[in-house]
Length: 223
Image (cartoon, rainbow, N blue to C red):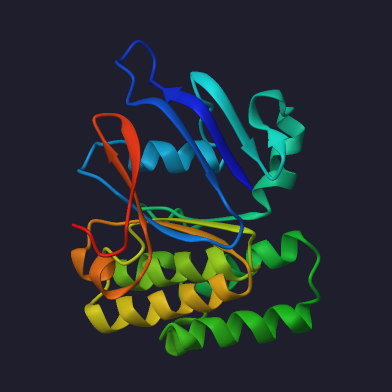
């Protein structure tokens, strides 16, 4: 699924933000990704969704060597990855419904199924009255829920979420965590970057912790 071997990453001539990281993620696992602000959590996720190549080492996704991938092969890999970005990245010219529907339409799902699944999911995340609102008319928390729904609608093999509950109150955060758990039970590998100690202590998942550019694995519940 995901293999890092002696991976390092830097931006331009800056010092390495990640150094000599090696790990393998077994399909179907669930991890929190933790570390101080600026530690490199977003950079690690960026490599996993093909937003940035490592400056050294080997990275394999779904058995493919990322370094050797041709640009035209990227979309096929990315279709298997759901991403929740910190800045949401919703398409301003599409309604909440159409933003969430986009991944299904790309892979050719029938419009009848699109209407059923998208409506059901948006209602579940508390947006029943906002299906046809444009992002600019939604609050930050509402936009976040649209972004989460878009990331999981196609049941990806790998879900990467960067602070997915950062703009949400505790009841909605818990509700979405249970949704992530249900997705994980179907086989999706999940990595959630978070600063929330409440999430870390409330759910029994190990942590991938970044400190001083290096990665260690911590047992569930450790702060």
